[in-house]
Image 1 (spheres, rainbow, N blue to C red):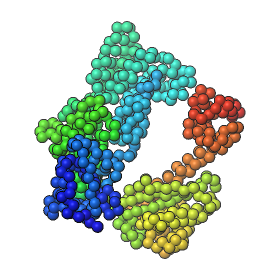
Image 2: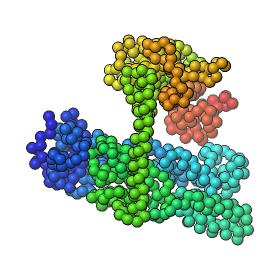
Image 3: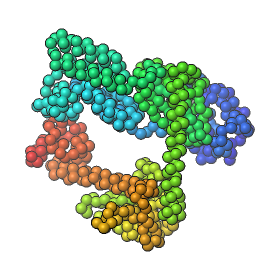
Image 4: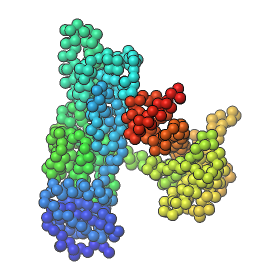
Length: 609
């Protein structure tokens, strides 16, 4: 039953956190307050809160649980932890589970190198990490520049240990060849130190050090070394000239902008490092109940509370009442103190306004993209005579290798965008791998037998093929008594010399002739994108299975190496080719192998050469 407002007078008048639950007992909103009783009452006073989402929230509340704490700081910390735990629908949730590109310097190695890595959440402690970069292109460009400026090694540890002469990168002056001791450890360490300084944005410090090193080399008559340092200096100065922008702040600064549209909030984060705007990130929060200051407080604790290196300043567009407590929480384990500012004038206000402008632009772009996608999907419903608006589309493809390792894939597009989390792969069991119809029958029966039970059916199904595949798919749906889902088949018409280029033919249920769209149609592009994604996903999965089978089959011939140890070797080396070339020392590093196993592997290596 709905929440009884008579209970409002029973709530405590102390600081704390409140959890609102629905009739199932699920937490739908979590908030904090200086005075719990006063804050909770505000939700139930008619007209007190004009936000359109509030009536929907209040109508779902069945019970409210409170947790009393001793301070606002404790309330902030508890609220953040509870939001992460319960993931309430009406809170602003930062979905930060994707991986990001960073540059890593493995400083614990004797000869460190710079490499691109993908990390998720808090960086490991096995080296120095720089980033995350906004996209892979930006990270690759930075790595390319680093390799030009600071000739550290690029080879693997194994290559480093076995090389007898320098590679071509040394001849191109892209590597100082530590593999064959053409540089000293002290000289290499200086390169690493300069690389770290450069990546941290200390351009002037790097240049000052390089000028000193060049003069020292000249005084010692090491003119070739001095010339190399001079080339690096000129390259850095040219790069800085290209990258220089107006400096609103010399501190490492993040500027947050926010734009509201209905129940949705669009947030932009600008990254300024050493006076240079180096990138941005966008976040969208839907059905959020928080006011701007509450949303920003929640965002700050979620985004910066997962082990990220803190900037010196964060600029926010509105005043946050609990800013001091947030600073205290974030600064607890920080190496440098963070300050959260709400600038009212000057260059920092300009940066804050710029972040707000980007947040609005993000909303407008998303709105335009969404409108365009809806237009294409409406065209799809109309031209292909679909019963449903194709909000959710599932597409299937099969793959096999000369009749072996038969697999199938399913990709999902929602609102015209791929939803990778819903992708599925299938090992085909009963069907003859060369029988496309049998394979299609099996995968569709398995998929929609379960989907019907869980009421998780799509609006439209796409199968790769012609009339035969469409007929098979229709029979599967009829046998499962599914009549509410549209289904189409997409087939390439292999071009003839008198027709020119190939055409795509779209076969519809209960229609004799296929639909042929113009070659520049946006709808055709979407359908091809969906079909090609299913094909890519199936091929990728099939190749992985083929690789596993090849390796396991090869390892099965080694005496004493059973399935468990085969899995260990596969996980460690990744391929039979690498295992065949592995030296004894590397084999001995594999956890779980005995000395006898290593001897057997060495004997096997000899027999394979």
